[in-house]
Amino acid sequence: MDTFLMFVKAFLVGGGICLIGQIIINFTHLTNGKLLVLFLIAGAVLEGFGLYGKLVEFAGAGASVPISGFGYALVRGAVLAAKQDGVYGALTGGLSACATGVSIAIISGYLVAVLFRPRTKKK
Amino acid sequence: MEAKSEITRENYKSYVFEKMPKSSHWKNMIWAFLIGGTICAIGQGFIELYSLWFNLQDASVLASGTLVFVAAVLTGFGVYDQIGRFAGAGSTIPITGFSNAVVSPALEFRAEGYVYGVGAKMFLVAGPVIVNGVTISVIVALITLIFGG
Image 1: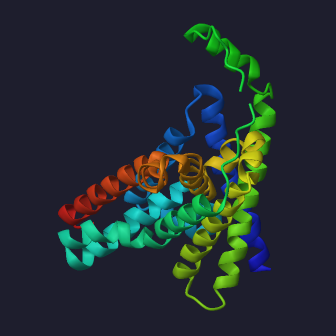
Image 2 (image 1 turned 90 degrees about the horizontal axis):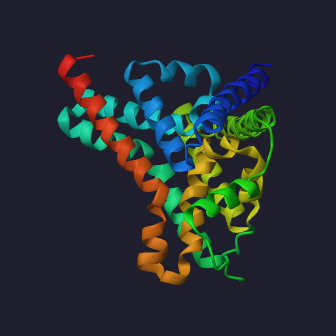
């Protein structure tokens, strides 16, 4: 039951975040890259105030899967490590918290680039 | 490829506008919500699965990693861009869109070699994301340190 509820919450919150993104695209014609950076910063700043973590607790993947969750993970990692190791932690914590995701993205990107043929873009 | 001889800035703009899918804002938004929500729900599925073996934090990281990998392969098959055509932000904002932004240029610029093609172009979009993300995380952490939050 709890599990089912988490799926519903993940769907609604995740969909809601994407909906906000689509509204921004519709009215500003922002490019995808800028949109990603915008949401990343939004997640990071919200976590700076300790808010995004509450959303992750509430909605699970609904908050951690959108790119704002990536910003959240960076800040959370950096702050946690800073509390332990001071300035050194502030410098290492963010990237090490996100190392798994970034490494998987890089490795699978490389693999796909080697194994697949580029598709001619349909106009 | 048939080259168009007289492409100027203006008629290129109108050409692009002409070719843009004319879907209404409402339709866009509904698709973004549905696809974005579905991707997150799938992510939740992986979290529940990995929670059987790992703690919640690790399960969450691995779930995102799984989505990144799946999206990379789907990008290779050209499927992800098909989804993106109607899902808009619904396929951009989730971590799978980040993966797509890494893989897509890597694949496209392979002809330029593995160093300056794949290796460099991979970070066309991921670069700005990581640069901004790391910078802001260090700043927030330093502020927390100074104010002892």
